[in-house]
Image (cartoon, rainbow, N blue to C red; front, side, top):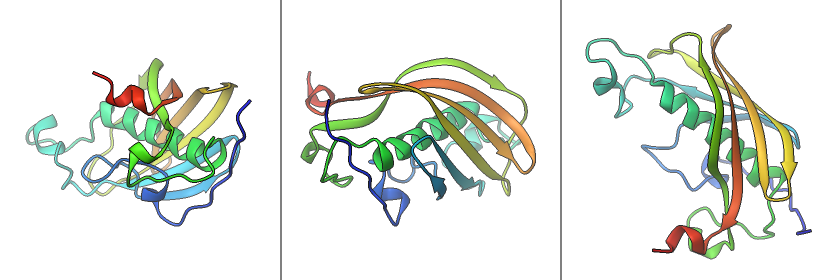
Length: 164
């Protein structure tokens, strides 16, 4: 089995390859071996909101799923990283692409998030099978749960991302 390295990063961008406008996490609140809590303040300036429901500013459910996925990626990069040196600015540097989405098992939408809301994701690692990670997530706006989901991420060889 591959060695696992723990990383403590200062910025969200140190965990993930995602960048604006697709980076959907503003803050990492906490991260340990089994869970991560992240937040995003919805400004209303996100590029996708005006076209989602014109005239009604609602944060899309697909982006809530992506926020869950990115949060799971933070946990993998921080606590289940197979690389001693990890470079988020040059993905080709890394032998693995961490946290590639391979399955969404369930997603249940229970409410809406709007500009001004702080969207909080709590993602829990349910099972791990070497390079495959099963997660459950709960997203809240204020004290109201607005989404629950389950998904799987995998660490894959980086060259698979660049194969034709």
